[in-house]
Amino acid sequence: MRQSLPKTIFSYDKNSLAQLGNILKDYFKTKKDLSVSHQLNSVISPDLITLLNDENLDIIIKNQLVFLTKQGYKWNFLPVFNKNLLLFCDFQIYERNHQYVWLSTNISGRSWNFAESLPVKKTTRVLDLGTGTGLLALMARLKGGTALGVDINSRAVHLAQLNRDLNGLDLVEFQNCDWKSVDGHQFDLIVSQPPFGFSSGEISLGFAFNGGNITGLQATKEIIRQFCPQDNQTLMIYVHVLENKSHSRFRGLLQEWVADKSISISLKPHSRYSIKLWWEKHRKKQRDLNVTLLPPEFRIYHEVVTYFVYLTKN
Image (cartoon, rainbow, N blue to C red):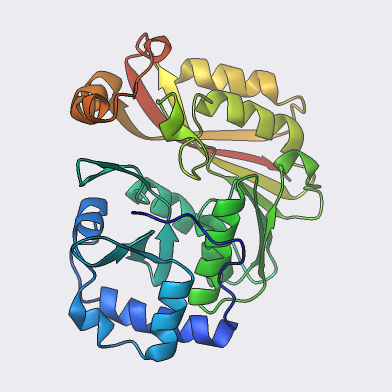
């Protein structure tokens, strides 16, 4: 069955991890299907095993990047390769009658688009709030900046550190802490993809990509109140908002939360999807796991709208 993380994880030197990362990236470049279901339901291919030397295999097995099933080794974390970044993501997995049921979590195209849109240059100092896999911080480093990623979830921080070292990146640090304890004044750019999720109960606890019953609005409000931009600073947030009507309500809320009226607010709707259709799509999983994926308090909304929010003070 799937294993929990060891107390000491990823103990190998950075050069060994970077070497392993290059092997995995070269391998995944040739693979078209890196979906959650494909990776979860497939035994790790023998052709990948043949590419790895004893040290590489030792890293993978001892650091529990795989778990053992009756069919063979499978990934304990989901590998995602895109934009020359290799990221291992956490996912939620349950075994029922020797069947592995997955819920969440890939990195969506919207998240990649947000990461690519970061206005980073060589002198940019970036703070990533709720870093998760480390995507935003690592993309900022690829663009030439330096970055600090923070997350209250220690499991997420372990994975972000792993992802940094697998990609051979320096000048990126990750800390296990609440963002409320962070001083944002020393950074040029503050970014966040707040947690979201329409689930309740055990399935949403302790994972980097699902925030339980917290809504995108609540998290965004807290971030804006604490990290409202100072002079020559930008705050960027990718947020999921439960909506009934147009986005004008959300813009009004942003204006209420921003106390400094000299701050420019740019709000770009990125995508929309129906809550009802999402719920219908996941109803079978709800029956299989005996949990509520869409609690009644969320069913009064019609859709989820994703926004890229930009706050600047020049």
